[in-house]
Image (cartoon, rainbow, N blue to C red; front, top):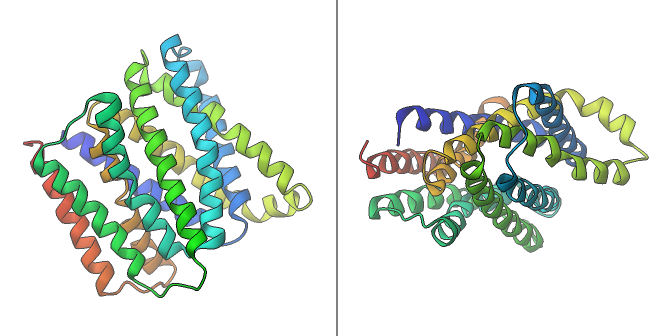
Length: 282
């Protein structure tokens, strides 16, 4: 993998971990997530004068991604309603690269070297191991179910956007128009659901949501761009290292424990990233 692409995808992982930490740091996750998406719309609108409209072949991918993202947003909110963050987050993010690998093989003909397959498995296993870092609550089965649903949607929109970015005449136009549309349906849903407390919730959460929105826009924009240059599975696996980064953020900023299992998981991810780089002969 080109060192620049590697650096940018890992940067995207840092941005992803940061905005997720903001959304999950307390308060109403529905409203915070809606604000994040709303800021993405504003960022995209500001860039409209600098890009052309996407070519016709790219539009089915944009609309398909928007549709899958709406299901993703709902699944994310529900997984945190029924499950603890420390359990459902690693499940939803850690299983996604495996799904991306299968879908990318079927729909894009992407194949991985044996070392590349091993690297993806090591990264996913290290991430998922975090689910066993703390005790499970009784009745968390629903949380696990929605985490797996979230993982399926992550795999789906990752492959759709990977193919869409490659189909677009201008990947930056694809990114701008995707973000312009993506947050509207979910935002309308949250306005309806939280209409009685919306003003109070916005007043409490708009700052963290706004910062998270800028980070989310930059982070996923980098991922889509990277997938036009590098196999989607590799980008997905690197992006999901955000789970380890989120654990580090929690330990440093929120005073959460970072015990032996998390150290081992972090070391496993680091080894997987090195192996991934080696697997592509760079």
